[in-house]
Amino acid sequence: MSTEVSPALGRHSAAAASEPVLGDSGEAADSCYRVEGASTDWCTLRAVSVTGVRHRLSGQPGEDSFAWARSEAHLAVAVADGLGSVAESGGAARRAASAAVKSALEAVGSRVGMGGAAGAVESGMAAANEAAAGGGATTLVLAVVTEDGCVDAVRVGDSTAFVVTEGGRSWVEVFARPEDDGEVGTETDALPSDRVLSETASWRLAPTDVLVLATDGVADPWRDGPLTVAPALSEALAGHPGALELARLADFSRQGCHDDRTLVCVWTR
Amino acid sequence: MTTANVSVEERYAVFPFYLCLDVSASMAGGPIESVNQQLPLLRASVGEDPAIAEVIRLGIVTFSDVAHSVLPLCDLSLVEAVPELSVQGRTSYAAAFDHLRTVIEGDYQRSRAGGDRWYRPAVLFISDGRPTDDTDRWKAAHQRLTDPTWKRRPNILSFGFGDADPSVLSAVSESKPNRAFIAVEGAEPSKVVPELMSGLIQSIVSSSASVYTGEAQLIPPELPSMAAIPVDRLD
Image 1 (spheres, rainbow over the protein chains, first blue to last red):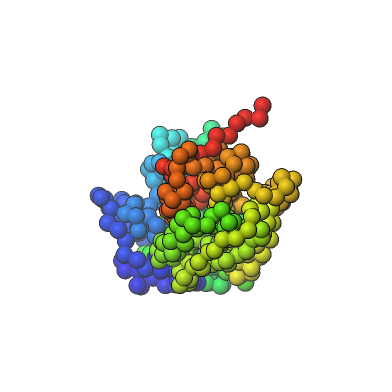
Image 2 (image 1 turned 90 degrees about the horizontal axis):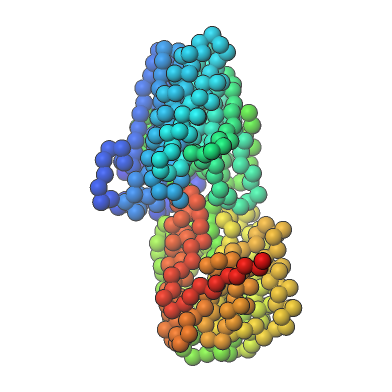
């Protein structure tokens, strides 16, 4: 996919326009662009993971991942961001995201009629923590969406969730924003952990809303670009883009934004 | 659920580096010539690599009796040439630290107003001699620069050769491990300085690369002619 068709949102990044370096070897799961888009009778999912510019320029695979699992009336979605400072974190991210959605869905199934998916996301986080062991470290955001629009979410680390509302004219961040004193922090909670410190949230998604799970490669420029990135993404998501269109947009050019980027978007009918 | 805080300010993350160079009279000849030869290479290595230039901001401060900013903190891709340095005077560490304290805060405020968010700034401190100020004076200035309550306090890597004092350099880097380096015994400045400058380029390049992983680090250089100054335990 050519970066020439990806928009510049803010100051253009010359690095983003550079030709990527071909790694020593690779396979589909390591590709720069991983995209999914499909629907059920009550919800639509769009998921995209784009390898960050610096990884592309060094021929390295990205370390983000996404996963989903669904039943007739529930959809579990997750994004995970492997920590670059710890080896094998891409693998940890994949294992954690996959285990989280499967476990959450199983837990929901066993809790039908018992008060929603709140406990299910905690089960999912526990499963993710176990799966992340064995090499690497990762953040995780997990959400379970119910056919009636109820959403339960949990996260560890700095990946986050947004809800786009009012036809894309507004958006809210579900979890607490990082403190902004002008300096960029570099410490992140992660899985696996002996003591998982997670945050939870629950709300109802209107049919006109869009749920967005995002790694910090998207979330940081979303917050830092209130005049460019945020409105562009919000408006596009409110328009229910196709999968490839979302991938093009997620690959936006912006100076200093070279981290892996992953979005999972859900809207209901 | 938190609500959006729609600020009108667009923000970009950058990693500021301050090269703080001793230009006292003892640097005359080979050492300052080596520095002047290497600075254009530094400009090219950082400024002509778009991935590095986007995240690195570099300023050059010189000090002798007084300190000056010979290159204000900037995007090196926008700089065509770096200034040539000349030597004079004595070696006032206090002047260097006081100047850095003022410049870093001023640069931060200007950068923030312009939409940049900072990683903690790095100071690369290079000297070929002992401070000629009173010890109390330079230590007080150093304390102001490294005050833990000052949010913009920098991480400091210090490098010494010639008559530089290892214990002083260690103190400049707050006695933190792998932050202060001294030329090994017998190493000639004519060999040390080019190697040091080349190493600093690599440090800046490697540190900028770490930014893209999402976990920025200040990565010290590997210098065959220099050894890390050991840090002793206080108790």
